[in-house]
Amino acid sequence: MMFTFDLVSEPWIPVLLDDGTTRELGLRDVLEQAPRIREIAHDSPLFVASIHPLLTAILHRVLEGTSTRGRKAAWRQLWDQKCFDSAAIETYFARWSDRFDLFHPEHPFYQVAGLSTSKPKELGSLPLTESEKSIFRLDSELWFRSSPATAAQVLVTAQSFGATGKNSDAEIGDKKIGSIYSSYAILTTGLTVWLSGDNLFQTLMLGLVPHELNHADAPCWELDASQQLGALASHGTKATGQPRGICDLLTLQSRMILLVPEDVSGEARVSTAHFTQGRVIERDSQGHPYLHPMKLYENTPTGVSCLYLSESKAIWRNAHALLYGVHHSSDVGGLKFAAEISMAELIEKRHLHKLNVVGVVPKPGNAGKFLLWRHDRLPIPPALLTDENLVGFVRDANRDADLVADEMRSRFATVARVFVSGDRDGGHKPDPDNVKAIIAKFDPRRAFWPRLEAHFYQLLQALPNAPEKALGDWEAVLQSTARECLRASCDALGDSPQAITAVAQINLAWGFDLKYLRDPKAFIDAKKLREAEAKKVAKASAKAPAKTSSQAQPSLF
Image (cartoon, rainbow, N blue to C red; front, side):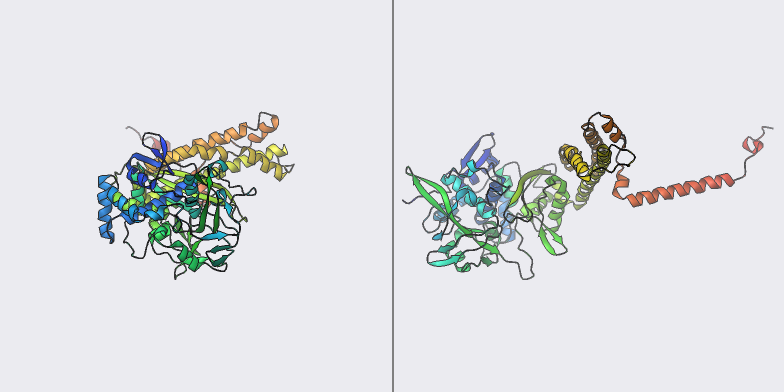
């Protein structure tokens, strides 16, 4: 039985409307109703991060002009009219209508017609690797409903977020592809970033950077994927090549996939798919990676590298690195473009963007396994995108927080050692494992970091107007929060004589001297210098002749 599912008109993309309700829309409605949509609203941030480049690629094909200047003018016209050109969108979808059919016999969307494998995979295993050994796991109920809409969501996510692993033998028609070991999909490693505006229209416009249009560039659905990938991949060799341009990168087919629809009471359902490695982007002639427009990079001694999510740090704690990347990287996620239009006063200086950051943390030593994913939103005033000096204040704020946290942990470690040993004089050496267990159980940093997050966002908002004052207020928050968290951890030890003796090793009223923590050696050297100068003054005063009473109080006669 032949099935069809038109992604242009059929609902499959979940969105949050401006009235607070949610619903699913097709591609046409998402773009035409974008001013009345707050955001893409899927339970998985990986789908949200995957659908944005797809929508952006469509808009690049719809935006008028070929030169940078012409496309900037067209962009400005759209921004002023506060909506996309419905006629242009209709024209584009009409031209490529057959390419947006999920089950088209020759051009299934984002798939490879004629692909077959010796062992099809379950639908839920396509985005990243799911297994009982993997800590990273998607909600099985979410991904196994197997409606065409859900299958489309899985398909889009799998092309951007897929893990490494061995695949079964594959072929396209009569051509043998063999078994190809999968590389990570294009967005799996590093951080994926984009700016959010007041609604989905603004969000998509901020990511629609009007570069010059490369005549060879095109999204994957405008090409014959079966011939293209089949010609590149054969005999277990990956399909490698260079990107043709921005749209090619945004819609890269990291996986060759063909969904297998089934007839269930006259309706299409999908539970399995043929699946193997797709395209891999080569490095350029200088050995540098091609920079994806939604990923953040940094220069390292070994070359250009992605910025990665940290298992132990919330994303706001690396905000300085993210913002530094804006000023010293390619135009990632439209961030530099947002700075440009901010300077052109198309965006109010007081307006707050939200910097969306999505990333996954691979499990060390286990290819294809993941510890966690995270989607954070940082409020970013436009000034932080245009003034690199302000990023220095953000760096100092993050550094000071780390210094205070380390000092707080060090003081509690002193308490823990005495608590375990029961001997304040150090005569009994405590068991290191027991000390570590106490620190891990009552670590004051566990409460410290969450309490700071809201204050950090306030810092970001205050920096453009009064950076010195904003940093001073932040330092005061660090002091008070650290004292509260350290006291709470000490109180958690109880009120036994052993606990009282241990806590007495530190003064809970002590502050955290940031001048000392920032550079202990310089602080101590300066202190010694001041003490030496004081001694010289005292010595000179002692050698000076004593004044007589007449000198001290002259006669009145």
